[in-house]
Length: 69
Image 1 (cartoon, helix red, strand yellow):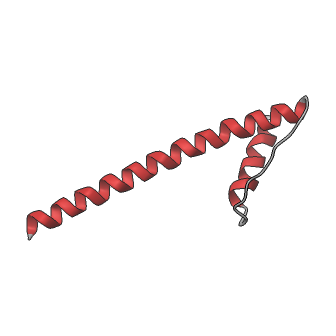
Image 2: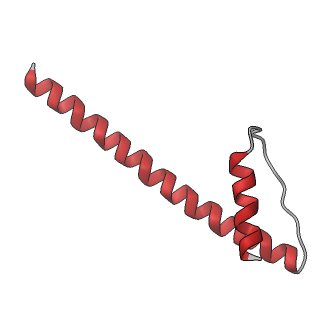
């Protein structure tokens, strides 16, 4: 179920279509969806960290440019 959930995340993230998706499952399918949601949350955390680092890098670059001018 965990491997299937990770594969589902990969498919969702690599899809060119960006639209809402409804995930429904029972028993094993519910476990796959649970694993998928956990993995999506992990990807969200990584994405947010990356965005914060990029923003901090831009602020530092701007300050360095201001100091040299």
